[in-house]
Structures are given as C-alpha cells and as structure tokens.
Length: 236
Image (cartoon, rainbow, N blue to C red):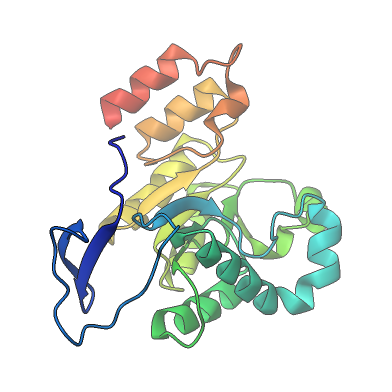
C-alpha cells in the first residue's frame, strides 16, 4: 500500500529481478535490452485462484457448453490470452474436462502457447443423482461418487492427470471428503471445493479440505457464520 515509485527502473537478469531504483539512482548497463513502460504501472503478476478457462465469463452455462463443446481448446487459448493482457500470470482452473485442460496445460508449460502459468484440478468430484448429472452442463467433467470408496477412486482418477489441486464439489459428506483429502495429501496436493451450508463446511474442514470456494453462498446477512470461521482458524 506504499506510494508508487515514479520514473522507476527495474533490472532483470534472466528470470531474476536483480535491482530496483529510479532513473536517477540506478544505471542501466551498456548493451542492456530496454523495455519502455512509460505511462504504465509495473507490478507483480496477479494470481487468480478460481478461473474456468472454458467459459470466458459466459453466464448461460447450459447453452455455452453444449454449443461450444467442440471448440473448448480454442476457447482456452482466448481465455489465457485475455488473462495475460490483464496482468494475470498464474491461474488455477477449478473444473474442466480433464483431457482438454491437461492438454492445454502441457502446451502452456512448454511455451508452445502464450498463457499464464496454469494449475489445474481436472474434473469435479460430486455426489449427485444420476438424473442431475445427465442434465447438467458440466456432467461430462464430473466423477460422481455415492460413497467414500467411490470418492477415493474419483480422486485417484483426477490425480492420474497430474493435477495440482482436487475439487470436492457439491453433495459430498465428511467421509467422502476425508477419502479425497487422504489421497491428495499423500501426494502433496491440496483440496478445495464447495459446501452446502455451515454444517457441511465444518465437516469438510474437519475432514481435511484445505479451502472452500464461494464461502459467501451461505453467509447470514452478509457475514460468514462464526462457527465456520472458528473451524477455519483452528485447522488453518
């Protein structure tokens, strides 16, 4: 929150910032390549911990996924380019078709395409009815589990895609989340996901879930219930 440094100079050697100063205090070595950022703000890259590369901000998910399913990989590139243009240099994709997003991550990691650093979860892990899954716009991205062992198998399925994080989505109980977190934590991965209310959130936290998305979805009068905050603090 400090004041910006005007007429700043930043010296970079490879991938390392070696010196920061101003035009008056820092000399640029002869022969150095100079990027002129006059009139701009230079700042650390932004990190977005919840993106869906396959939607580009579209809110009619049912229409979007069914209409553009065959063009999803192209859409990933559009999303990635847009994030770079707005200064996002690392992004966590929290739910996509694993084959598609893993293929795009491979291209991004190799430098084949212009993209932020991409971290992925692969698909969702859920406990929903078969009827719901069939009609759901993200059903094809889902591993559905009706008990703890099926949840464990779903975790192992997405881990097989070399994901960075697992997403425990809607409908899961304490034992299912525990099975997922056990497999993730063995491999140094962490688990995030949804919660259906304060009681389910606390059960998930106690079962080892490391983060909760959309926590405000069950806030009371704009405030997250204190018992949920207490559980988050206790389990860090």
